[in-house]
Length: 350
Image (tube, rainbow, N blue to C red):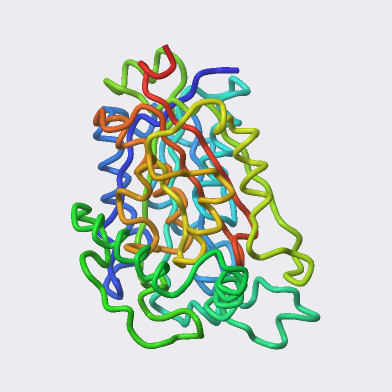
């Protein structure tokens, strides 16, 4: 296995609306920033991979527009996943492992503001038995939250405390869409209140991966990917135990999370109740700093929020604030698909 690291990370300020910007205009500053951080030019990148969603864009092959931001010349080796950018990072990691590239640019973006994202995401559901009922993303998360409350694993006060902790942490995050104290608010779908739900907004993110000595030359303290894996739950919600996340647990085992303690965890938990499920699956206790960036409760650009969790974990390693960090990304209703990565600084590996 080749040693591969995240050597640079950049993200937009996450805003409620970016009507004046196209996807390309939203991406360009991020792509420039992440390249400038390493001194690389587009011609130096061995592989480019993006993550986005045609559901959000409302048109097929929408990712081809974003290629204008990467540059038309020189020709590039490029791929795209119809997933959160965390899965694009996984593909790029595999590409580097094959030896076909030494560096990779990974980016993702999402503009949720043009439509009703709660309704759009319903299109992901089983088209025969669930989709026709039109349960939106908040209603499905509410089913999971109620199951947790019924099992005695949490309650409304505990969920409100999760929201407060995440958004208080986001006060130090200049890119956050919501930061500081937020009222619990009215019920959206019981038992979830406004404060339990992620903010809708637009944003983008990018990272650069590099292998071996190339990574050391590009970054004073690379965030080495020591393990990464992703798994999926059954499509049908009716056959899943919503208070558990076996796919997260299995991905964590294969990524090596349980080999040694982590000091930081960036969890992609758009709803407060999902942090409860993920903490249990990952065995996280009070000694672990969870979501120091504020997590998805502070900014949740759909299709970029998972990549941001990886980038935020890597950035803490770059700054010397973490030695061994866990990053998690999810996609689909009620934590259906989950990716887990372990990132380490040089001293932790040594």
